[in-house]
Structure formats: structure tokens, C-alpha cells
Amino acid sequence: MIVRWETDHDYVLVHIHQDMFGDWIFSRAWGQIGTQFGGLKHQLADSREQTQMWLDDESTIQASRGYQKVLEAADHTPEAQDAMRQLSLLDVV
Image 1 (cartoon, rainbow, N blue to C red):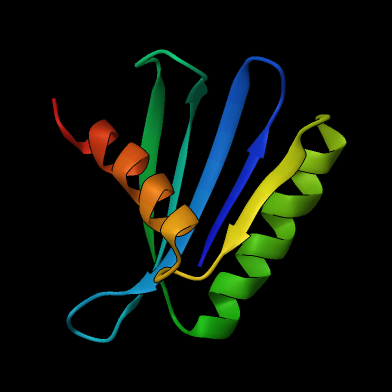
Image 2 (tube, rainbow, N blue to C red):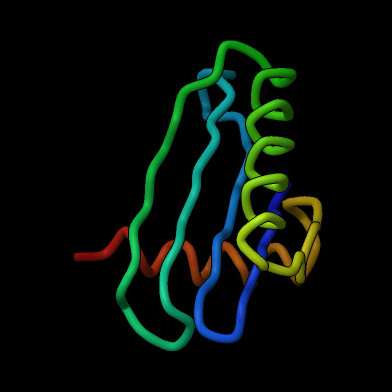
């Protein structure tokens, strides 16, 4: 699952997925729209339920900061694949 929030200048993107070992990963990317400024953090969760709790918390935080949700999609959708390409750009240094 991929969820993205935006303001006029900034974004936050969350990706929840399982790795090849079956562990649940909560990845969070943030930055300025249209720039390379930002960051990326991965957290290992104990369960799918824990990632959902973290996503609910993130949604509350971003709403309180004035961010609007602009994307919520399953990993296999074209929108999610496009978001993943953007996320993968942050891994390259």
C-alpha cells in the first residue's frame, strides 16, 4: 500500500510492504516537491497491524500539519508504481 500527502511545496509518502523474508516494512519518504531535498526512513514492524497503526498515526499528523491526502493505492496499481519510481530515486546517492 502506498499513501501520499502533499501541501503546496512538500510531500510525505508512506509505503507498507512485506520484504522477501515476510517481514512487514513501513517506509516513509518526505521532502520538497520538485527537488531532491528530503529523506527516507524504513522501519521493521512486528505485524501488519502495527504498520496500520503507524499509518493511522501518520495520517493524523499530516492532517494536523495541513497536508492533503492525494494518493492511496495498492502496490500493483499504475499510480502506486509511479509513486514507487519516485521513492526509488531517493535511494540513489
